[in-house]
Image (cartoon, rainbow, N blue to C red; front, side, top):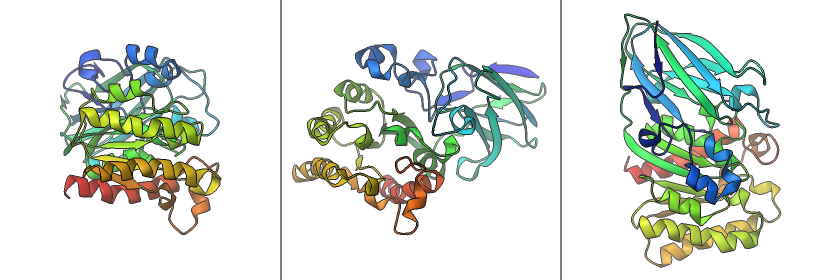
Amino acid sequence: MKTYSYKDKPIEVHGVPFFEKTEKLERLPEEVRKAVPSLEGLGRRCPGARICFRTNSTKITLTMTFETLHWDIGMSIYDCQSANVMIGNRQTARFAGLLHAEDYETMVCTEDFFKTNETEDVTIWLPRNEVIADFTISIEDDAEILPPTPYKYPPMLFYGSSITEGGCCCRVTNAYNALISQHLDIDYYNLGFSGGAKGELEIADFINTIPMSIFVYDYDHNAPSVEHLEKTHEAFFKRIREKNPTLPVVIMTKPDFDYDPLGAQRRRVIYNTYLNAKSSGDSNVYFIDGETFFGDTDRHACTCDCCHPNDLGFYRMFQTLAPVIRGILGE
């Protein structure tokens, strides 16, 4: 077997801003984390990050080394501490299994995955919750490793709460933004921060440095009050607009509307950002009412805790958002 680091060409890492420059599996650079100290830990973990390549090897051995390893009250090791391996064309890829920690003390995990000798894409989705210290890929000596098939569309960017980050589906590939990426074959960045995204303008300035094709904007949950939303929501949008005057921006409210007595007030603040943009002549802004995400049937079955969507909730979010994104892309 011959072994490659995740940094080695022709392997590509997607979903990590400026990875080509930094070679670090971190969503936020150190200077941004210093500016917003509440994101120090969250900014170093990488939900949405993917290690991508093509190979004709019939056996692939993956080894992942953790820098951090923590339990999560809402999700199991299979989501928080697992890499998901998908093989084949992204829009029809098959789930090959998990590379995961055996417990909360074992910092290195290794697993073998098998396929035919056909040259196929391999997409490895990194864990949601942990900082990854190292990742290696081993293939058979007589096999080759090639660059992955390019994504059909350039990256879109999601900014928001723990829901944006992927809480609480059973596998990272079942989050609504991951489903958007897979079904539409669009690259993306996940800047969801559990309890940490509060509309800080420092994060808007960082987002403005990242090339993106669509911006999806949702931090409703993390705002500590309606007043906080009023102070930050439209200001954050305007900061993005200053640098990206024609960028399609999708503004969303939270999906678990049923359980928040202040949900209507929060929605009104967010909807006003949209209305003000439209009234000023902005034709590239879109609004999705979070109350519509879970549909009319079995809404109660869509969350695990009256807040975070489960797999059903995320799939319904995907089904609501996907037509909007398809429309923006001109499909």
